[in-house]
Amino acid sequence: MFPRILPVFFVIYAAKCTLRTDQQFWTELAENELAEALQVKWNLGVAKNVILFVGDGMGPNTVTATRIYKGGESHRLVYEKFPHVGLLKTYSANKMVPDSSCSATALFCGVKANQETIGVDASVKHKDCSASLRPEARLKSLASIALKAGKSAGFVTTMRVTHATPGPIYAHSADRKWECEDKMPASAAACKDIARQLVEDWPGKDLQVILGGGRQVLVSNSTGTKEDPLDTWSCIRKDGKDLIKEYQKDKHDRGLRYSYVSNNKQLKGFDVDQTDYLLGIFANGHLKYEHERNKGPEGMPSISDMVEAAIKVLRKNKNGYFLMVEGGNVDMAHHRGWAKRAVDESAALEGAVRLAAAHTDPRDTLLVVTSDHTHTLSINGYPYRGTDIFGIAQTSKYDNVNYTTLSYGTGGPGSMKYSVKTEHNRTVAAREDPGVNTDSFDYQQIAAITLDENSHGGGDVVVYARGPHAHLFHNVHEQHYVYHAISYAAKMGAYSGTSAIYTNISLLAIAAWVAICIMK
Ligand SMILES: *[C@@H]1O[C@H](CO)[C@@H](O)[C@H](O)[C@H]1NC(C)=O
Ligand SMILES: *[C@@H]1O[C@H](CO)[C@@H](O)[C@H](O)[C@H]1NC(C)=O
Image (tube, rainbow, N blue to C red; front, side, top):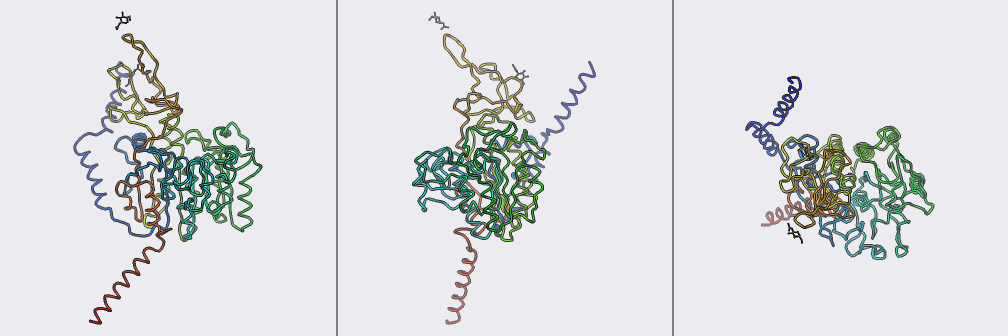
């Protein structure tokens, strides 16, 4: 009896130790935060470099769950220690709740757009090819204005490089699905697919870093393997083009030094000194989830591995760089109702932010971490502090059935955890018991409303910032403000040379005043 009880006491004792509740503990937590807050100074320098992280679908509840997953309720994620935060309103030109292409257009191109359009303003309706060809509808991205300012530019994504979030960095399309020619209707014959825009058009062809998935949209008749299957939901190129070869030919013909890599070994091994342009395509479709990718030499890289390689190439430019990093599998997992996978992907993105924070200097590099939209994830009451975020919250006294701490507002058929029963001559919904495996990666949390899949949410997302002009993120902002704030901080686009103008104006004013004084 005794030896069996002993470990239980140890567990209780350990739990008590780690979960302090005494006054001193809370006071120390708060005093540390106060000391930190009193240190905050505005950094009025120019952002030579900018790295913009987008956790796709990483709403505030996903971030809270990530924090608890990684270290408990009092833990702080690396970007939660950034000195400046704000909120972003994510509605689009035509929807209260956006998709990832119009929200990426807002973030990277500075205006709100219609759902499912890429890099074009709201004069372009979804699927309206001819409207998207009008030059005045086509938007310039942060990558375009960074290149114009003499900086390097590029992006890293765990999605296809032609997907909704990276798309607006370089493409203009009336439909996010036009990633390759095979998904384009006859009415879009005059429009170029997104993959070709990346390789053939500006600014895509001048991007120094392109890392992600999407071989099947770049190379005709790509074949899948068990490890790296074709994504039959998305476009599969069939027009005979090999855009990876075209990329290489273009760089070769222009005398530019490039590397093409397609697995972990090559990404670790490319010659940074001899590489000014880096293309890495690691999968037919999206990259695998972090917890199930092959970490060996033939496998796919983590988001941190890609960010590390990107920074190595981009920082060679003495004028600085703009880099966009998308953690896209947060969104993919949420769509399928896999909260633990989504949170694990969000944790992987935090790892990439940690790496970037360590490899850059806050004096000259602006780091911005945000999301494009939320999901309908909720954190339900009232689990005990210190319990598993993927565990059971409580039992409902109305049906005597357990419920999980995490659940969704909307979800696919796998999240429809109701059956029917007859009670008092009425047919009612009976909630299924969540069982004991709610902590598994494959567990789909219950959703209130059944749809094809979990939908996006319309709540605000948080924006965290560190570095020059990070204080421009300070209250509740429009999502497309991010483009303007970054342009200002890095003196790009409409704000290139702003400080020079202001300095000149003040010098002129002083000179005029002195002249007037002398004349008097
Ligand atoms: C159920 O319906 C039957 C027949 O319609 C009726 O006799 C019975 O009283 C009802 N029971 C309840 C609990 O309403
Ligand atoms: C309900 O959850 C508790 C843990 O909170 C667990 O001990 C219990 O076995 C669960 N009930 C069922 C029916 O699974």
